[in-house]
Length: 173
Image 1 (cartoon, rainbow, N blue to C red):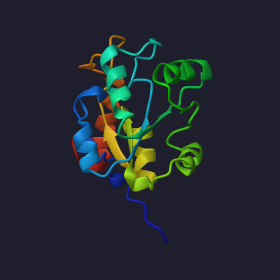
Image 2 (image 1 turned 135 degrees about the vertical axis):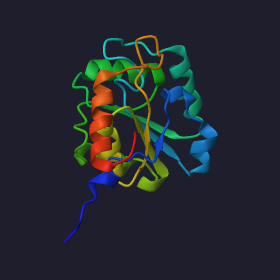
Image 3 (image 1 turned 30 degrees about the horizontal axis):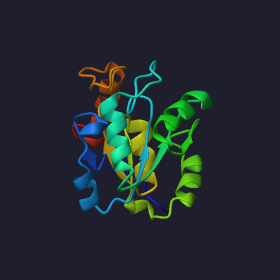
Image 4 (image 1 turned 120 degrees about the vertical axis):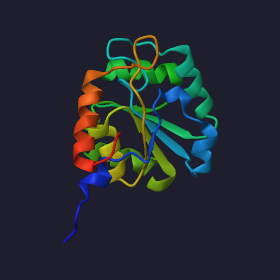
């Protein structure tokens, strides 16, 4: 019988306590990361803005020099996610169904690295972190951004989700 430890599935390997553009490329390289799978809504842009901030766009473009990079979103709008992917010139999946592994496994099949060399970056514990841990990836939890690309200091939904994860895991996220 396989035992699933839900506590470990909800714990990110790294909680950044800031937005994605504050992640150190050198730190990722030191962890032997070779590919990035990045969430879109909340992680790169706010839910109602289709344009990336200059800081986040620059971070992604710089990261592409070091890592295979792919966008993976639960958003059902192909047009919206394609618009973001086109700004960055990278491939994408929309309607990803996280935390289901099905569509993400298809992406992992095309990435030429093993799952422990891939980091998934997202702002949600119960989707991004959960699916990444289920697939053996390095999981990075970031704070959500507003429509200017600035860290949201108080995100009620994210606070509730992290509180629930804390109750389950016993750790502060």
